[in-house]
Image 1 (tube, rainbow, N blue to C red):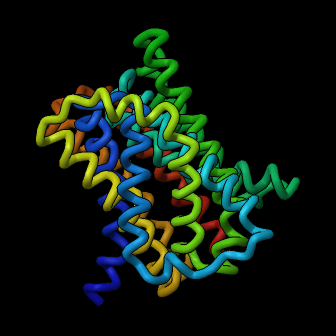
Image 2: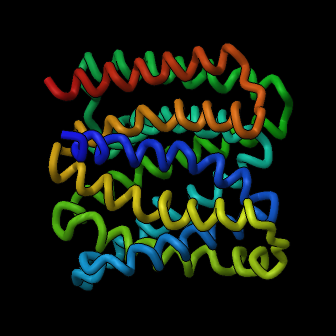
Image 3: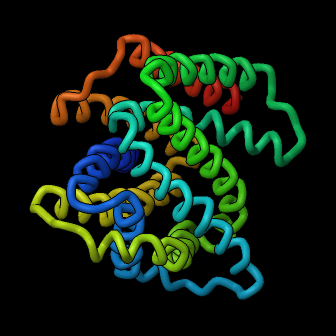
Length: 283
């Protein structure tokens, strides 16, 4: 029973802490370097799992390439740039809207409106997302750009999940993710390598990016895949509810970030909307 809870909780804890690790990493290296290095470390970590080397048919590599762009290269580049403009706490809290954007994208691709219960959850969740964003938008153009970057990253995740679903059913998550990360390394290298060469390392940023790559970009995905296999994708996805809570707590406690009360309220509303969606889709 304890191991079951571990599988459900640990990805949310890791991904919630990822935004703290990004903020710390930016103290030593530029945003493109953060994205490139975390993907490289994640790829090297996943390479140690035998299941990663399960073959993938040549005809599916085009889809894997899209995943490399939509799941890794683009969104993982957006978050460091966003965190130069908004707090790690707000970045993590806005990631609580990930299920909302994934549902919207899936409905768009299927050309099918969501059910009434899911639609209500979407409306509630999106209202919470707006509440979270309002304080940052009032801080000026730079913060507005940061929020926009986070939202575009979440939309990219939504398309990536739609592409990944069939591939993961066919091959399992780890072989698909590992190859997508390999392609993402190629995509992020032209901008990432110059940042890496110009980095001025100190211990905390270096350890933060090692943790970000090994745990946030690799281990959490493996644990999530195991949880989905044991409990089903719907129940395993509930780990996402931890991400904004962990990001908020770490940002406030460890980085002394200021988060507006309206943004915290918005985060709670967003999570309520995601919970309503999950409940409606399970019936």
